[in-house]
Image 1: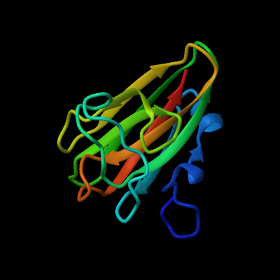
Image 2: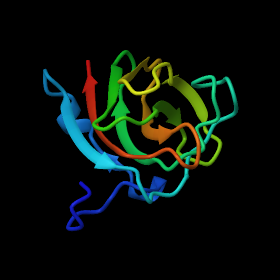
Image 3: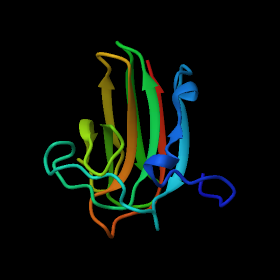
Length: 142
């Protein structure tokens, strides 16, 4: 994604739609690097990860039907404190559906089951403005 030849999913408007690929049995994996990205999505302290994720972020989206579950796992590919949020709508202060920021340098996973048709935004984030880096993101819809 961050090769300079494709659009980096840095903002809500640039959110990369992973719906079709994520419905494959093994899901889909994308890679990126939040270094230099903007902080477009934050959420109130404690409501999503226990922290205010105000670091640089990348935004992906999936559209779910009622009863479908999305599971996302974000793994830093160097040592940095990655944060993961599943939110809607995509905005500066969205509603948190699920999130994780439990590990200092390991993978973070979150899942959400839709009660009605909805678009879920998967946000790969850092826990503070100076925290960013390369990552791998696995997204699966069941």
